[in-house]
Length: 287
Length: 313
Image 1 (cartoon, rainbow over the protein chains, first blue to last red):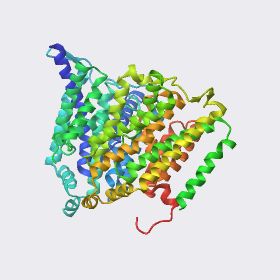
Image 2: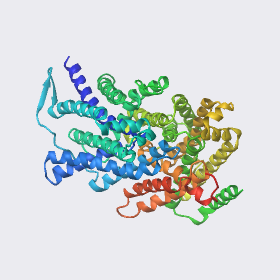
Image 3: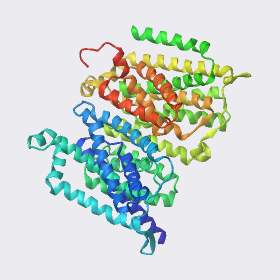
């Protein structure tokens, strides 16, 4: 019973992290039609900046979190300006931006390695202590992730459905020309979507930095997992992405329990390819 | 005919280079360039000609590497037999990846082929009793005829085997791209609906192109394993992927010859930069910036700059 509950809990923690990560990818995809390979690297930068501000400079963790998220968001806007904007309107923009963001990922990752070095770093946990849930014990930091992630996703959902700016994101995603005719500033909306997505990546990085060591390749594995999530859920709606994130997180936790650490990624990818053979637009995706 | 004369001239130069270049390090760089040229130019077949974004292209190379590693070291098969075998296993890998890809479109092709690469990487890491896991395999049997080791005389044997491989691979690519099949690939790339209406079976084409573009990278991988005597999961890293991709893009997708030239330029440029202090990490960063600049200002790559600009792109 205890193993069952602790597996469930670790699955939910993973799911929450994947949801934060993948919702940023999904937001950029639905608005711009761009798949951002640099998403994981933005996450790494967020974690490194948070570490620098809070540990190396010594301004404390709250300042570090703010700086990490803000720097990721700012960098996201820069990535959009330099790597995406010049290619708008090219007939094969989708595939060109895959390559430019892949190059962006290499630049950010190698840049991080040159600035911060390859030595392992770790952020302190946001809150100390442990929490016991139904007899299974997890750290308070992980409990915080379980609580914070749904709140942020809820706020994001409210933002995209209730506010003018948020609605303009969706309007641009559906029809750029019509949105422009309605007086929406399309290029501002693109920058906003990229900045928001990157901020979510930065936040994931800060949260992950309290669990894992921060290295220049911190973002690579979560990026791959977020890709699994968006393929599985189908790129498109926030709800499907978040749902898929928790499905993948729980599946991963239970696969680790039953198949072991080595076979789990293999089983996940195999399942993913199987899903795509039968449902080319994702499990929850609409055709 | 300029392309043929360029090819022939380049070939002649490469064939006589060992007469002038005697040190084994420079020859090593040439061998690496030959191998990467095979990878990049075959990638151009699926990416440039068929417009199919196969981000799992290096899986074919890795399949070749591990085929020779396992066949020659674990099973004791002669590397001379194991290297052609790696072409067969890589073609099978191409056939496998084409199964999910044949029906997908746009970004999903990128995501699935990328996931396929990760799948194979995880398989290599998890099957450590077969593949050596993260540490890889060492001391793979090398190439020799009788008592003559190919590494002797400053890698002279390896140089000519690698050059021969590049020549055969390039002739093969020119044959494929100039055939009716190659022309039908262009038709599908440029106007899929029209091509379909003219009776081109697109699913069959995708399966074929992925299989055909897998063979020579597989053989090159097999040769790579016998040459370096190491097989490591590093071949499936982001770094290797972006290096090979930048060769295709900087050289010019859809030209075959462009990626080959870019392979030489990039191998020698990155190695030259590795020699400068503090540039070890920066070189991949510079290659990535170069890739973006080419996409931005010369979408046709170097091949476009050399050729006279056409009226209509």
